[in-house]
Length: 122
Image 1 (cartoon, rainbow, N blue to C red):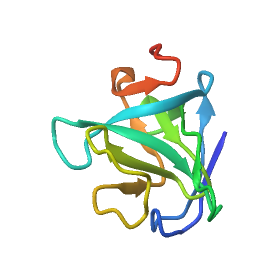
Image 2 (image 1 turned 90 degrees about the horizontal axis):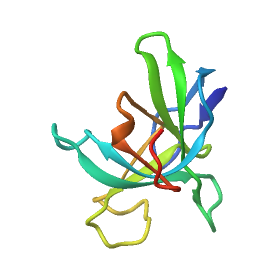
Image 3 (image 1 turned 180 degrees about the vertical axis):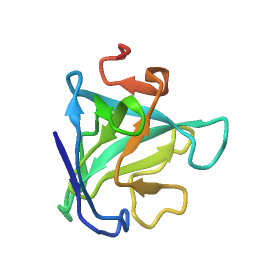
Image 4 (image 1 turned 60 degrees about the horizontal axis):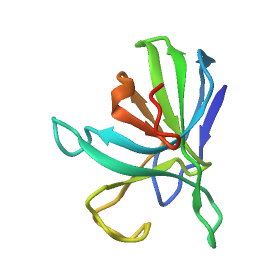
């Protein structure tokens, strides 16, 4: 599988990566992010696209082989990456919000840090 993210207002990093799939992709709605706190915080996650009218798109988690980490859970979204916000935050998705942030993708070691749309674990 390929993950391509263009440099954009959601995340400055552009990338093109290739991974070997080790399981099916599942729609994901929440992840535990370790970006702001060492113990992690649960966040809503959405894919982010270049569509100015409807930038939100599905985010997925897929088990892949990563040369540096062995098997990992890759969380990816649209051509502009993924966007996260704490679950306690009640606001719409917005690039201008200081409480939200974008990432090209996430690589999470533990399936317990991912909540899929169907609420089943990986």
